[in-house]
Image (cartoon, rainbow, N blue to C red):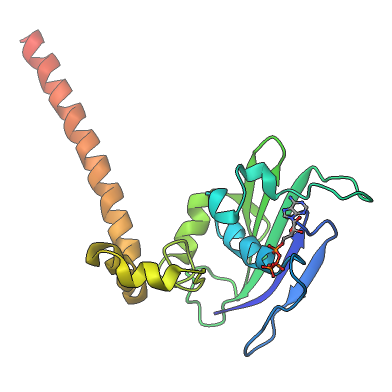
Length: 199
Ligand code: ATP
């Protein structure tokens, strides 16, 4: 599983649509200060479902939409699509090319797509769970993150190991199932109360 290319349009400094091919091996992004190198990493984090505007260096999510320049008008939406090659089906989806796309409008509304079909953020998060790529993954190491990992509490650090071991997905599902069970228990108690009132 590897990142093949990323298309960015209207995201931060990318007023024009650009396609960045990521060849095998090591790819470096170079350019003068303020030319948009970190914006590429932000675009990757965003399309993977990042919800915090602060961690994308903005104050609200709409800040990521191209704001225009002295010569160009601002845009009404931002869109990032990334193509991931999935030859070994590490991602549990029956495609060898997986296209993940996210779009945001100035209204703040976000749309997500997997291979052209609109989906929920949850679907994208589940697709990447246990691959090391998702939000809890370790494929994007930001500035200061190594320090944070080394100085974090053992329980917090554990999440990284769980993701690498492929058990994080099951932990999330267990939590969801436990929540449902709790809700059902509450319903049952309510039904019992009503029954005892009737009797
Ligand atoms: P450095 O080498 O200094 O770290 P960089 O190449 O990583 O810089 P970025 O931080 O990726 O640069 O990009 C900063 C640029 O992105 C700034 O010029 C800023 O004006 C521009 N930018 C950020 N958000 C927007 C936006 N919404 N619309 C237009 N331009 C934006």
